[in-house]
Length: 258
Ligand SMILES: Cc1cc2nc3c(=O)[nH]c(=O)nc-3n(C[C@H](O)[C@H](O)[C@H](O)COP(=O)(O)OP(=O)(O)OC[C@H]3O[C@@H](n4cnc5c(N)ncnc54)[C@H](O)[C@@H]3O)c2cc1C
Image (cartoon, rainbow, N blue to C red; front, top):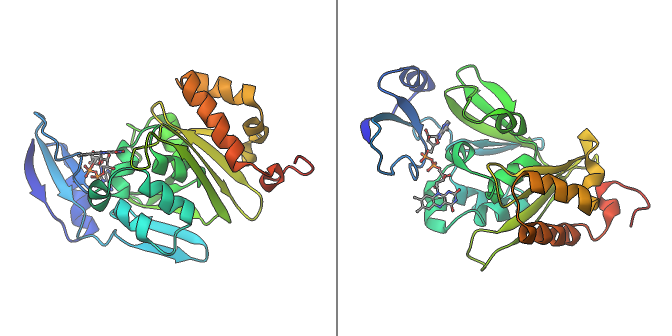
């Protein structure tokens, strides 16, 4: 139950409100989840007047404000196609027009194509107070409930050369049953993430961690997916998707492996 609504015009005012312990005071993004009926009294701080709704590209560093709507990712001309595509696969257009990147970071699970795409991009989240950043993988790898601050202000990543995205869904309008997303940078650094089950998407391969060969090793992938609760059908479907995104294995930096 929302008992107070605030719409601060400066970050200082927002931080002051969010630092209160009573009543429980939380950020309000698009409100698609916060507006659900609940018995718990809560005060909300609407972030929409703080200018957090921009997407910037500064020398291949992309910065997306926490109040950017999911639909803006679909429509943006400066974002890689794979990212826009995963945003479109996230949910229907009505929710995409309201829900924000900040809200998604706080709530999305293992079946979220967009969360998987940001994990594959090795994205960093900026938090207030303190303007400190944390890698998304590090934060959700520990415990997402333990927040590094009161509010997310932006999400940032280095633009890859390309993002490959594939999924399987019951229909073109349904949320995917499984998906695979790979970000590949000019340096050949590559991160492959799979999703469809569990609390978070799974980083299946990260060239900077020497786990790289695992995406070509069916047995290794299956044992990772087993641990995350993927059933036999999902595991088989993921193998098919990995085959689809790796028609030429040398694309992932392993010479003579085609
Ligand atoms: C009909 C319906 C269908 C839905 N379908 C889907 C779906 O298919 N897939 C899916 O993933 N979700 C779905 N959702 C859930 C919801 O839309 C998403 O989780 C959405 O991403 C939440 O974003 P929001 O901006 O609306 O968050 P809000 O509802 O505003 O907030 C959600 C949580 O995030 C916190 N928060 C928001 N912004 C910030 C910030 N900047 N910093 C720190 N904390 C913040 C809030 O305090 C709150 O705890 C659906 C919801 C509805 C009502």
